[in-house]
Image (cartoon, rainbow, N blue to C red; front, side, top):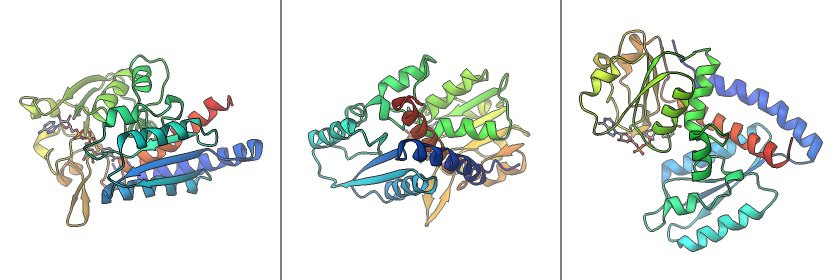
Length: 280
Ligand code: NAD
């Protein structure tokens, strides 16, 4: 069965629109997201524009600051510090990757944790990892929202996550662990990967290699979440081979699975940050 991220995201947006209308009536303005985009990476440009469009669809506001590839690190930091102080901005997102001459971690951690919609600051990561609140990164959060939408309870399942980035693999492993799945985290150095993937009740793949998970690596009836985005000849592909859909109980398509839910989670995080800052 298809885990339809596109439709689930649309339904969530419909409910969000009503909440935003109420906020606007009460406070006179909607939550605002500022996105910072450095350089000319074509994929990043598509992502930032989709994020802005999603904000506008639900009645939130958003602007994108397009900055030249050659911007100096201290200029970028100064810009973020001024956005931190601006009370009309509720969320700040620095689109990654940044050019090589900029220290990504330093820049990301300049964002006020109370405006960190992507949940990438050390403070938010620490809070999520110690279960003391915080903002979870949008992609793992979106995956959890999708599982919830389909009433999939992961308690007791063996969840295997392939990929351990700070952005996706590591935090989704944590969130699944918090939901009482038994989690195995696999990565580039994992030996005999298929031994693990084959024993998964729930398989999450976030690597960035087309067709790296084939049918023989998946247990029939498993739930398969494909996070990968691989561009080839103008088309998008996931990390999981299309033949896997014939044996999975549930699977996410690419595109139309995790991608729309990531944007959904971003909207969710923005609203939550707005509510915390405005005490509502
Ligand atoms: P990353 O490059 O930071 O991490 C990749 C991970 O894969 C690493 O932990 C690495 O150890 C692991 N890996 C590499 N080769 C492997 C192998 N042969 N076997 C097992 N593990 C291996 O990437 P990322 O930022 O986590 O993104 C992963 C993929 O997800 C990319 O395709 C990215 O475009 C996509 N992505 C999609 C969304 C979305 O909204 N759908 C959001 C973020 C990332």
